[in-house]
Image 1 (cartoon, rainbow, N blue to C red):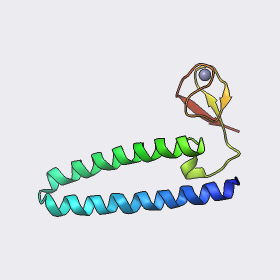
Image 2: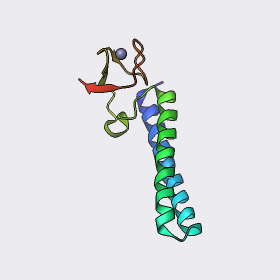
Image 3: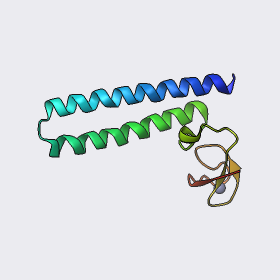
Amino acid sequence: MSDINNNKNFLLQQFMWIGISLGISFLISYYVQNPFISIPIIILIFILLSFYMRNRAMRKFGLSGQTMFGANNSVNYYCMSCGTKHNQHSCPRCGSKMKRVGT
Ligand SMILES: [Zn+2]
């Protein structure tokens, strides 16, 4: 499996997610006329959706959500607790989810 195909699928999912969230926000602003109620609901749904999509993408590709912006596979991630270099959701050594980007 090449990285190019993975990136293409990942981009497609991002576009799909943008479409879904746009549709949801249109629906909510249509049904909830009061913007003081509809806007917080939309923001909440956006946050939940982005968490869901990020977790799904990470499980599928083993990538961190940060690569979404860089799309650079040469970036390394280091555990913030023990300094182990890893590319997983959580550190394989100590289990910490905190990590920093390095080269
Ligand atoms: Zn660690």
